[in-house]
Length: 182
Ligand SMILES: [Fe+2]
Image 1: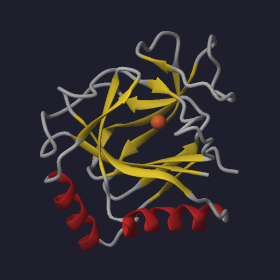
Image 2 (image 1 turned 90 degrees about the vertical axis):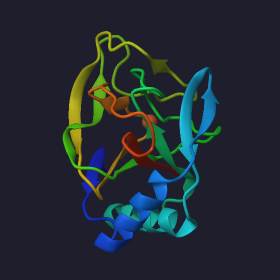
Image 3 (image 1 turned 60 degrees about the horizontal axis):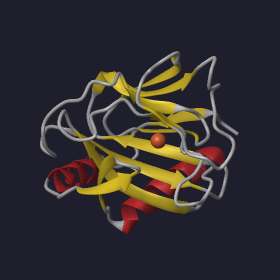
């Protein structure tokens, strides 16, 4: 089982552009995760299907969707440090979590982190979120590359990295697709 892996060129160039334009125009709704608000919007089911197919092709597994959606973060919303594991999603335990990027922004991306206090993964059914970097250190950094997908073992601690946000809305903020697979 891969700990983490990148898949490049997930969609064709024209499908990628269409999807990005579509998501920039959408409205993102708040989702309350213990007063930690995430902003999401639904995506077409064929997009979810394509993402899961790609991961299954690379892993040789037969993973199924728990939930897949687009997420917006800007300098104004969901801007906090949020180191966490995706060990539990809607009461289920995903094997992998995936992040799909829309922009080339290689100094920014997703990091897998570990700490002497908390270790590198959360194996039980409890959720933990750290809003301070504390003693966490980056083990793996994956840069944002447009039309690429980064997937990792869902139990591993991770975060948007570095925790610097950009923009104020869907036009200039950070839109990603996240997918949790079991
Ligand atoms: Fe996550």
